[in-house]
Length: 269
Ligand code: DGL
Image (cartoon, rainbow, N blue to C red; front, side, top):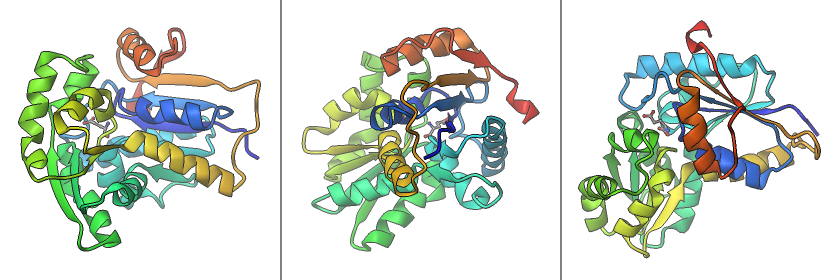
């Protein structure tokens, strides 16, 4: 048993898709969340910049003596984690493995779509891992750079959201995929618009939620889970506007987070 907190980070709101599921799966765990809202988006940055940001985010979370760090960001998980995972003396998990595991089990026709940021798609990490499971799998990739600003501005299901969804997903839909990996943790916030466009026959894989399920198994297997029933704490840190994060974060998590969010200077880490 280990009652230390779990550290989770993303470039902004997207990682809350993992936090929400961790709260459901592991209700006794305390969580420290960092959303790098001052430097979002990560997905359009060079690999060097993503590496620099990822290292800084991990160093910040380590100041809380967390027991594990979840990179709830597809971009940092694919473009940085393989390079930096041995640099730190804390276990670090990313979203790719868990999402791939769910997708290869879900597909019946072996045609999987992957959508993510430019950084994630450019890394080729999803395709590499899916075809390592089964070389017969066909993977159809598409970067969707306008999705993250839609989410960060609260455009979850508006007419403009639907138009952009159609623009990005038409080719993947026409390829007849039966499974679509939402390879950026922001995208589940657009799941309604994406699901309606893709149709009922396509299973959406929420990479944030999948990493939470993986985390539950890992912590229990290693008896590193918390049995703390009365003192579960959630704290949120951002690198820019607190009020905007409190507002959208409360809507998405369906719990009030006002007063639990603080601003930090991430450049110090
Ligand atoms: N939510 C992140 C991801 O999963 C980052 C998106 C971004 O900042 O571009 O890729």
